[in-house]
Image 1: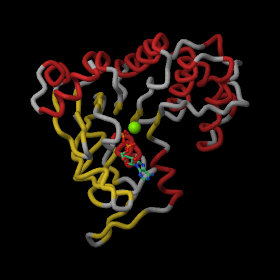
Image 2 (image 1 turned 90 degrees about the vertical axis):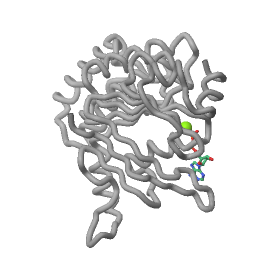
Image 3 (image 1 turned 30 degrees about the horizontal axis):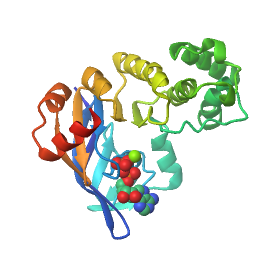
Image 4 (image 1 turned 180 degrees about the vertical axis):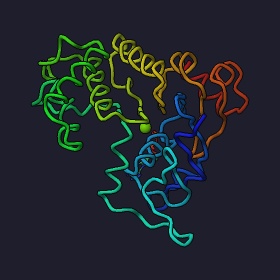
Length: 253
Ligand code: ADP
Ligand code: MG
């Protein structure tokens, strides 16, 4: 097994507010890690550090062996250029709570945008791939629909297809179902489960404990900017060792 994500003592502050206080973890290629924890514990910030949407104050993050956001010279870290950061980010798909589709573009046009603009993929090839992806997320008939004509669950599935169009080696999900009506959550989780089954490496911040139990290889409980507890999801969920994990789980389950 090879390591896809490696975080070493990652620290991040916003002014005086210390949000990440030394986060260390590893995700192996093809594995799914779920991160759970109370609001404000630093989960989103951690995901944003992985694709260098945030600078870290200390520690290191590697994706597939590449140091993210910095170059090391003579033992010192120098931030890479925005252009190089964007290049690293291309290989990391991110799906947010709010789907952020272009409202004036169809589902298909939303998906072909980045491959054509960023990777220079020819339109025919991009469209062919987009149709395959729409099929994979169960939305073939919606290729020509605009976001406003789609349900939240459908929009989120388009957003997943859009991220996959860049052929990422890692997918980050930040509460992808939190903004959805309850009856639409399942269809998005089903797509994510299928993606996991196909071998995608995934880091998923979620409150869906059923998904975590069924799909994740490892569950991490984060609170106050540190990993409080981690392990096999079934074990952590049925027998949490730390009192903060117990308190959190008793609220959400
Ligand atoms: P979570 O995703 O676990 O709910 P976040 O990572 O979003 O937590 O936030 C952790 C803490 O960092 C919160 O207190 C939040 O208010 C703060 N925070 C997040 N982003 C910023 C920012 N850009 N500037 C200042 N504070 C921020
Ligand atoms: Mg968050």
